[in-house]
Image (cartoon, rainbow, N blue to C red; front, side, top):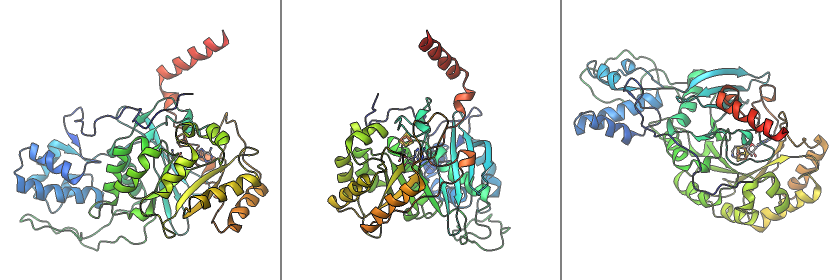
Length: 414
Ligand code: SAH
Ligand code: SF4
């Protein structure tokens, strides 16, 4: 089996690509990038600085997609912007709602690649699970996404675009006067009411959708910077969790440059089992991984590392496995908690979920050692929105792909 190294193995389109009508989509661009574009479009330095700050705020903080709505920008300036730029969103191919309230969106990029995003509402929080790649190169044996053949990195615009779209769908953009307001002769005061940020449904973001975020490091970092920016979406880094299957060489950089919460997909406590479940383990083994966890900047009892552990019947769910997990966490003195994820089935999967009693026993062994080990309730299974079930229908829709599969099948039968 091919085990890709830490060098980005997949294609990323350029972040700034003019659309067919020549206009540039500002979605996913930083304040500085917007400023540079404005300067390239012949705004003088001072104007570019002011306008980019205003536009950045309107786009990411207020969710505005129409330059006409940017009321602190002069009326003559708005068409100038609209002639040159757009503020896009990912195209929604399908939106589904589970019986438990979980929502899933199938999204499509400009070059017709499909990816998914999931929103999980809870009593005290709402978590948006976003994708970092179309598909995933890593082929974990129990993960549906890993079986996708088409893989491409998502751009910062496509990553931030998911959060923007979720806010649109949940109707969560602040209304009323902005905290930020810059003097402008032409300023309209149409916007009455008050800026409100409280009582939001979308409170947390997890990078646990399709893809391995640390294989698309730069774009994930740039996107998260916008999501965390006070003048942007303004989400605290403490409310964002990046999940990695263990791309060890990128973990320190993730800590330094993004510094969100870290989740690590462990799933196995012996070389043999983890090699099978997470093939990347053959490249970066358990001890190397746990050492990188111990060195992750800012970890403490208040900011623990989450270990994800999918419960697979007869594979990784014995009492001895639970004890070994405790002993590994102790050996590396890790402030950690363990999320036990009941295996979510998908058509053709090789594994079964452990019995509920087994999962409880596994959890209590870890709890008794003083480590929190909650059992995750699967969400949105009926619409295939649960962990590891994401696999967009892009393959169904790609003729070339279908042809290739058919050829492969025939060759196998011959
Ligand atoms: N690529 C990253 C993030 C996406 S996967 C990673 O692997 O960490 C998010 C989580 O879902 C991971 O812990 C993953 O191992 C888990 N997962 C994958 N397939 C699953 C399945 N079928 N049932 C339950 N969890 C699964
Ligand atoms: Fe990729 Fe994560 Fe799925 Fe593994 S579990 S194939 S790394 S998305």
